[in-house]
Amino acid sequence: MRVLIPSPLRSYTASAATVDGLGATLGELSVDLDRRYPGMRFRIIDEQGQLRPHIRFFVNGVQTRSLASPLAEADEVMIVCALSGG
Amino acid sequence: MVQAKSPRSRGVTLLIATKKGLWQMQSDATRRSWRLSGPQFLGHVVHHAVADPRDRKTMLAAARTGHLGPTIFRSSDRGRTWREAKQAPAYREGSGRVVDHTFWLTPGHPSMPGVWYAGTSPQGLFRSDDGGTTWRGVDGFNEHPQRKAWCGNDQDGTPDGPTLHSVLVDPRDPYHLYIAMSSGGVFESSDGGEDWRPLNRGVRANFLPQPDPEYGHDPHCVRIHPMLPDRLYQQNHCGIYRLDRPAERWQDIGATMPKSVGDIGFPMVLHPRDPDTLWIFPMDGSDVWPRVSPGGKPAVYRSVNAGKTWQRHATGLPSAQAWLTVKRQAMTADSGDPVGVFFGTTSGEVWGSRDEGRTWKCLAAHLPHIYAVEAA
Image (tube, rainbow over all chains, first blue to last red; front, side, top):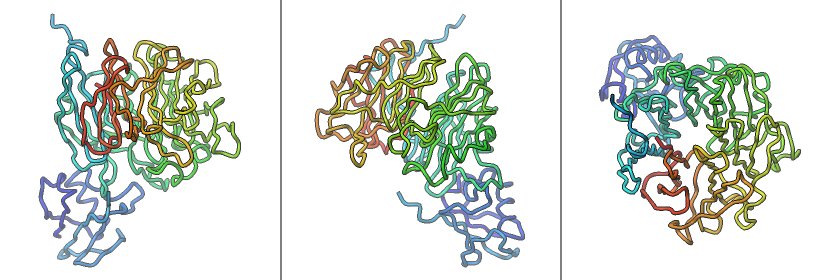
C-alpha cells in the first residue's frame, strides 16, 4: 500500500515522501516499515506499543489511533506529525 | 615515532547541546580564538552530547524531536558524521514505562571500552556494551523492588520530567557506580548495577515533611574527583555538599556562601587535578525559585579548599540586568593548565574562562536554549 511519510521521518526514507508498505493492520505496517527503514518505528511508536503523543495515522483520510486497525492493499496511509509546539 | 598531541596543543572542543540542535566550538591552542560550527541535528532537542575520553574520536548525542521519540546518535569521527543507534534506550515491553528522553550520557570505565551508561527521563538507567549502538536496561536499578519508592511516579519531578543523571564510574573499580535522580537522591552500587542503596545522609530535603529522609532528595549535579575518587561533591536543591568516603554523611559546604547569593544552583565543575578546587554557578532559589543569577548579577564561585570558603569571580561577566540560567549539564572544565572553565545559558550564550574562572569572555551568543556543554 501507499504510505505518505512526513518530513521529520524522511531521514529514514532517503527523503522519499511516499513509500510502499505491507501489513494487514497498522501495527503490521509499522513493523514492515521498520524492516525497510530501520529505526523508524521507535520514533513513532513507543516501547509499550502506543503511538507517541504527537503522531497520528490517517487511513484513506480517516484518523485512527488503534494499531489493530485493519488495512487493505489499496489503502493509503498517511503518517502525520502534529502539534508538538515549542 | 609519532607522538600524540596534548589536549592543549590541539585546542579545546566544546560540544554544545541545545533545544534546537548540536553545535561545536573549537579553540586554537591558546584558547583565545574560537570557531563555532553547526548546527547538526537542527530542530532536534539534544539533551547531552559527550566525547569518549578513551578513544578521543567517539561521540554520542542524546536527541529527540518535538514529534519523534528519543534516540541516540553516534559518531566515530569526532562529530563529522553520525549514525543512529540501532536500539535506543527503552523500557521493557510490558513494564508500562516509556522513555521520554535520554537526559545524561557517561562513558564507562577505561577497562571496558565500548561501555556507556545513559540516564533517562523518567528515571531509568541503561547501558551499552557496543559504543552506543544498542542499549539495554540496567535491570538491577530499573526493576529494583524499591525503585518506585525511590523515584515516585513517572509523572512526578522537574518541569521537563524526572531525570536520572550524574552517572559516575569509580576510576579504580568499574563495578562501583553512583547515580543521582531529581528527584530520588544519590544511590550507590558496588556490583556493576545489580543492586543499589541510597547515599543521602546529611543532605537536607526541606521540601519534604521529614527533613532528613533516607531518599527522595533532589541532587542537581554530583561529581566524583578523577584523582581522588573517594571524594564526591554535590550541588543540591538544598545546598552544596562534599562526601569523603568511606564516610556516609555528606558535609554541608554551602553554608559559607554569602547569604545574599545563597547556595542554590544546578551545575558544578571540579578541577581535573586538584580535588580541593571546584566551581559553581549560583542561581536564585528564593520564594518561587526564579533560577536566574541572584540580583541579575551573574558570577561563578570558586573554592580552592574543598568548600571551606568561596571566592566570587565575575570579571568579564555582565555587571547588572543579566538574568542567566545555567542547567546542570551546561558547565564544564577542560584539562588545560590553567584549567579552562565554560558554561552555556538558556539564553544561548557560551562563556569561557581560560584562567580557572577568574575572568570571563562571551564566546558565542544567539544560540538556542543550551542544555549541555562538554569539553572534549
